[in-house]
Length: 623
Image 1 (cartoon, rainbow, N blue to C red):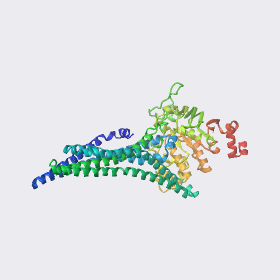
Image 2 (image 1 turned 45 degrees about the vertical axis):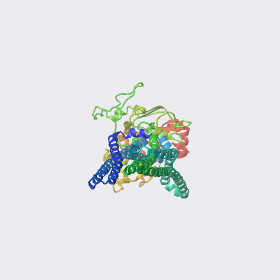
Image 3 (image 1 turned 180 degrees about the vertical axis):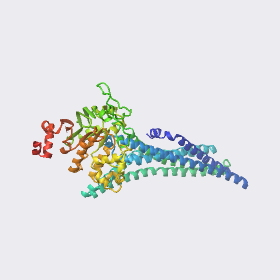
Image 4 (image 1 turned 60 degrees about the vertical axis):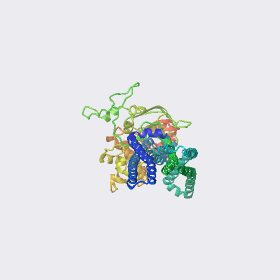
């Protein structure tokens, strides 16, 4: 998994990575040559070498040290740049992939898990890349080079390596096999901690209102202690490597000193050669010990890579899902001069709309010939659900008309709006927007033609202007104020000191629920959307404000440039839907009524019951 991740994201850093590896190899070469020079220096000193000769040896050692230091600096600099660059690309990719996930997929991963994968897991991969470039090429080469150099000095003492190395290798294999499952559990534990912290922070008012502080604290303490126990266990297992390596190193050094001293006494070895042999053995065993620690880092990175690829490799269920939050250029709806037939598909044209003249219709008038929304036996089922959330719903919404949607809890209202907004992919049937089936609708076209206001008001930190300009980054102040007026938000925005440039805190916490909803509605009205979907977006508004908003959408906006904009309004309030051109009544995903308010009162029992509950039987009968 780690290799696949590097293959995808290290492509732009191959030259820097290669140079980093080469400079690290240069450093290793000088480290391997240093014991030879030290051995020669010791032997020369014992032979009575003069100051000039010893100074020459010293100069060579200093030169080696400077060259090694320079190579290390270059390698460290490049390794840091590569690791940070890959980490940035990874975070961008995970963020983009997260935006493309359907709500079902987000629930499967969990928001806290996605956050952990974007932060902690990417950090593990970054660390592994940096250490790989700086150390993975260094320590294996140093081990092999030290063994070759030591054996070239004396083959008989090379037997010591053959005895010491397996001890360290066996310990390394044992630690790896035990640690990998623990690492997976530790990463899952981090997800759990992130989830609990997120729940506590987002629901702090509810927790305090129900006096559940102690309960939540106990849950968090339990998760923290569980994570700590696994971390301690993994640390203890990893700690076995260092004692095993030091024991092997100590025994080997004792053997070398004993055997080497005897060989020096016999005259078959020099003191310098024994010192060099000790240096090489120390380098080799230390390298293996460090390499074992490095392997643990790589195993953590492997675990993190698996978790990252799980997000990146999830197939997008919806075209353009998640991209509606990004600024996009407005795209004109298809020209209605070409009417699609039964066997043809009308594709969006990229030709600029002609300027209106006395004898030519405006683009808005031309587009009126095409239905804004067509559902033909549309069905959708959530994963694992026994019954469809939307079951063979068919309707046509003409340009400039309004469709109201009502139904009980679980009737499929939000599922329908999710399908229209592109959050879900239909299981069967046809969903067309401005004459184009959604499976053939590009991401840019969908986000330009369809504007969506979700149930939960979603504002991001910045300013009112930056939030309103999500759909059209080039919107003028007058366009923003017009959208605010239609959304009944202009008054409280004008009362702010900075007005359009007033700050917005994260999630819009510095505004009331009703103000947040009106700002979200205003954001949806900015730009040239052909279809505006409001999913119970007026639930926090009082009746007077709701009525004024309906007046602006149903009547006031019809006289502006949005005269051919269609609206899909989901609401639990009959009063919010009575003036709609058509009202869709859903019951367990099926259409049990479609028509005007007066028509449904006569033909749909469910709709009449809802009206009687909200308006009263006398008023319904009078109507």
